[in-house]
Image 1 (cartoon, helix red, strand yellow):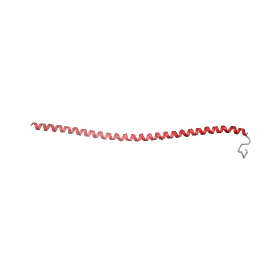
Image 2 (tube, one colour):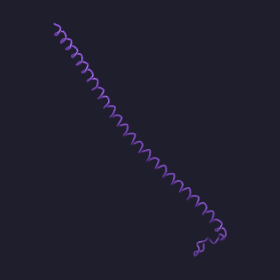
Image 3 (cartoon, helix red, strand yellow):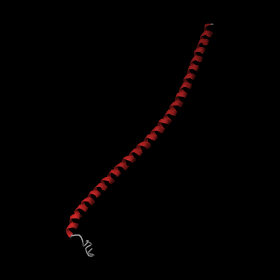
Image 4 (tube, one colour):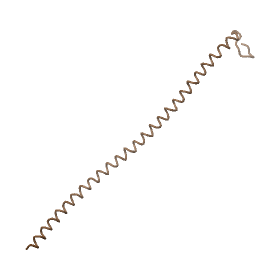
Amino acid sequence: RDSSSGIPQDLPVGALSEARPDVMKELNRVRIRLAESERKNRQYKRAAEDQQQKAKQLIREKELVRSANIRIEQLEAELTKVTRSEQTIAGELSDLKEQHKTVLEK
């Protein structure tokens, strides 16, 4: 090697100048592949984050549905109770009207 230029003494100068464009071409190819890989990784990361947000939203919605179903069951039970009570009161009112009618007819 020539210590001042860093070029090995046993290789002709033309061989290095011919190899250098090949090395640079390969380096550029690798840089392009790296950049493409990094871009794809960013896209995948964004897609994964979007899917995580959707999953969290679906979990919140599922919890809301569960709470709503519990409330519906409570309201249906209350409606059944009120309906029975109304029917009982309506029956008692009908009986009272009949008794009142009977008393007035006497």
